[in-house]
Amino acid sequence: MAEQRVASNAIDSSVASPDSSNQTESDQRRRRKQLIYSRAAAWLYPLAGFALIIGAWEVAVRLLQIPTYLLPAPSVIADSIQANAGLLIKHSLITASEIALGFALSVVVGIPLALGIYIWNPFSRVV
Image (cartoon, rainbow, N blue to C red; front, side, top):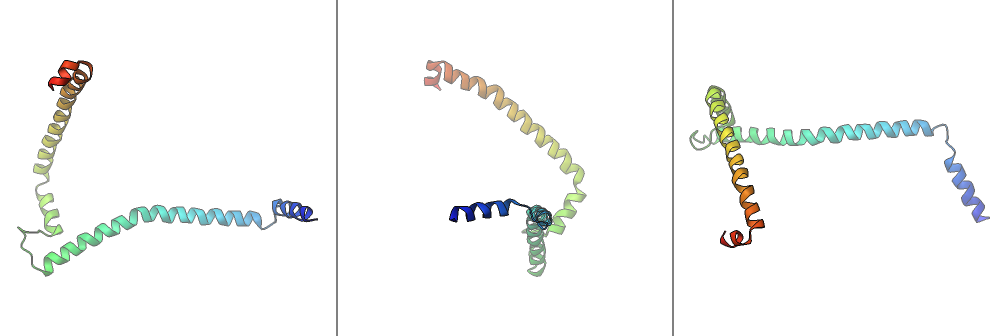
C-alpha cells in the first residue's frame, strides 16, 4: 500500500500542471534578473568604492589644507596629467621599449644558461 502511494506521488509530481510552464518562465526571469544584478554588482561595487576613496581623498586634502608637495588632490593630479600628456606618452613609450628589450635579453641569456646548467654537469657545479 505504501509502495502504491509513493509510486502515485511520483507520477503526480511528474505530470505537468498548467501553472508549471508559468512557474518555469518566472523562475527563468528571476534567474536572469539575479544574473544581471550579480554582473552589475561585480562592476558597480568596485567603481563605487574607487569613487568613494577618490572623493574622500579630495575632501580630506582640501579640508585639512595639506600642501600640494606632500599630497596633491586628485584634481591637481588629473590637471597635471592633462597638461603634460605629450611628455608622459613619450616617456611611457621609452619605458615600454626598455621593458621589452629587458625581457628579450633575459630570454636570450636565461634560456641558454638554464639549458647549460641542466645539460652539462660541470657547468652546473661552476654556476
